[in-house]
Image (cartoon, rainbow, N blue to C red; front, side, top):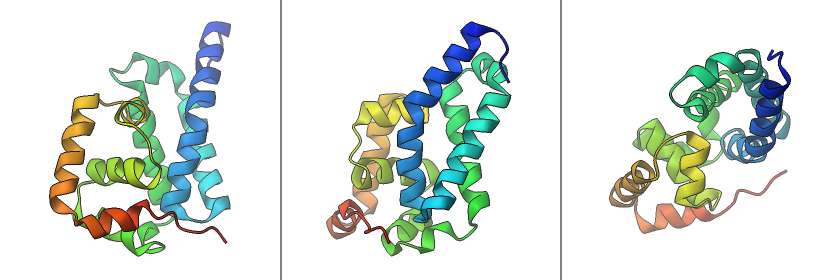
Length: 151
């Protein structure tokens, strides 16, 4: 865990900024509330435990996003079967493009917000969205916009 006050404040700001969207993403992937919370908390604990390493990296937000993906995969290896549209998305597209599509259409995030959350450049997000639009039918994108009801 970070020890100096400045580093602790940076970690606290990172957690406060990203936790809500991490939870929304985890819920969209896992559906189950407790599994979603557990995956996000495990992610934030891992990031906090290596905060200095994350800050020394070229893209801390991208490294943290990768940690969140790993936690979601660990929570359920067949995670995307809970929502058939989400399952199709992750089967048909590369991981980044599927994440970007989920964040854009299911969670209604802007290009800039997606880029900040995933730690990538906005033009990369925009390019992925164009690819998704070419590979996915309008019907699939509309289904993706439909928010799955929570139990």
